[in-house]
Amino acid sequence: MLRPYTAIFLFFFVGAKLASPLLIKKQHQLNNYENFDFIIVGAGSAGCVLAATLAEQGRRILILERGCPPEDYPDTIQADTWGKVFPTTALQIIPSAPQTHIDNRYVLLATGNVVGGGSSINSMVYARGPKPYYDWHEKGVWSSDRFWSIFDTLEKKLHPSLLAPNDLADCFIRAAAETGVADNLHATKDTYDGASYHLTSTWQGNRQSAYRVFLQPQLQQNNIVLLTQAHVQQILFDSQKNAYGVVFSHKQQRLHATIHATGEIILCAGALATPHLLMLSGIGPQEELNSFHIPIVHESPQVGQHLLDQPDCPIVYLSKKKLDKTASAIATCLYVKSSAEKKEADIQILLLPGYYNLEMLLIGLRGLPNVLIRTRFARCLTRTLLRLLNLLPPVKQLLRQSYTLLPCLMKPRSRGSLHLASARPEEDPVIDVNYLADPNDQQDLLQALQITRRLGEASAFKAWRRFEWMPRQAPLTPYLFKNIGTTYHYAGTCRLDDVVDEHLSVKGVGRLRVADASIIPQLPIVTPNALCMAIGYNAAKIILDSN
Image 1 (cartoon, helix red, strand yellow):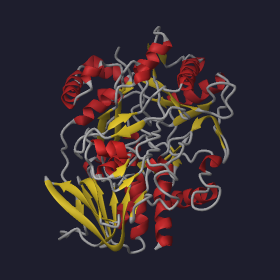
Image 2 (image 1 turned 90 degrees about the horizontal axis):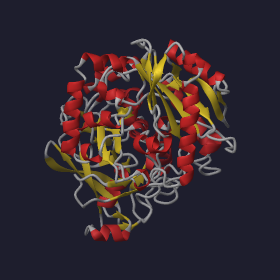
Image 3 (image 1 turned 120 degrees about the horizontal axis):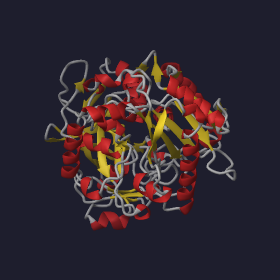
Image 4 (image 1 turned 90 degrees about the vertical axis):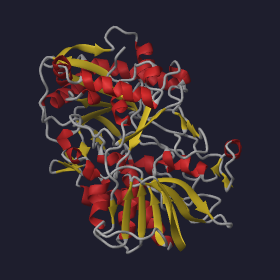
């Protein structure tokens, strides 16, 4: 059955890269890639903040980013264009391993393939989450007090703000009150519950990405180099297990970059790419590295383990009237307990207004047969067919008269893993998100669907609701198995204290750190983009203090 909007949209994103590489060094060509203070692999939310903070102190930095520059996607800057336009090359798409607990379905996973990472293309939801969550270490560099101070610092530049109200979002708030949920989000330092308009990473109507706010201003200086479409394939180590450089591909060339004798390499490639790169470089489970004849630099069995995500499952409605074209995509949210026994909210419900292209409507569509998504060729073919469908007037009208209520399980118990598919850097890893492996997750998501359906049936939506398109009369358990999908909140694959120490140094080797979502021990009950930026900033402070 065709389903609403997460995966097929991703099919569109598997096309050939159209953007040209970007090299920024104050408009003059770089002659070599040698003797940097820091090489940062990945310019996502954490990497941009990390690089900018280090550069402010005059350090010489090379940033290697696999994706394209945000300037290639000017339509993503305005906040109200999300859901209406989307850059088709801005995501890196990877099918999951067959999911044992959801009828062996493949789930399409995606990460930002652009400078700024997810912050350059995401839905711009901004939230800290409850403060107690951040007590990773009761004291020291990973305490909740330190996190709160970092958020204060970042927000002076980010200026998180509310999006403009709209009629449909107002209905969402009233429906929450009608179903017994507080119509004012009770967000303190300690708890999150209720419904409200929420803060976004926007300012004066424009997206505040980590690139735009933090990194871009620093690129005018001579001490920082950003190289895009640069795919790092291996970390180089000397005989003492100290990292000294990286191998990367750029413009079909195989190049090297090195740090000086006291420099460091910092991995900010994200929770999927960072453990993959570590294993390709000889850091990971011994048996797995041996099976692919990768020389072992250091055995680290927890690399690639404990993969976290916050799965969702949509309920889609057709509307009686067209949605306002200026309505912001995700202006409101709701936090609620899946059952009375829960100590705190574990479900987030988002309202997604109508879409203006088939890609965005189908971003959560996951009910297609595996044969249509398993291979790159199949995804390209599916993308082409969907683009043709998008030209049909009835399809356009349908898109503009739909809205989705999206419940997300924010505290899942299931954990996934990431493994090598081969020793070739060009080949994607095998990623098992392991959805619903814990039976409690299935029960919680089924409860979330029932709560969401009650919300959607509230009289507050009467002026908008024509009928429930999905799941309609379908039994909820099979519907969940077909429609569960990713929120793109991958974390935990190089956990703090397991793979890295409290200073983010990779255990067992020298001059190598990790500073991205892969270090997160447990996701907060909110969208984690603010957390990723805080990790980047905290990493910079830790590094500067140690140097």
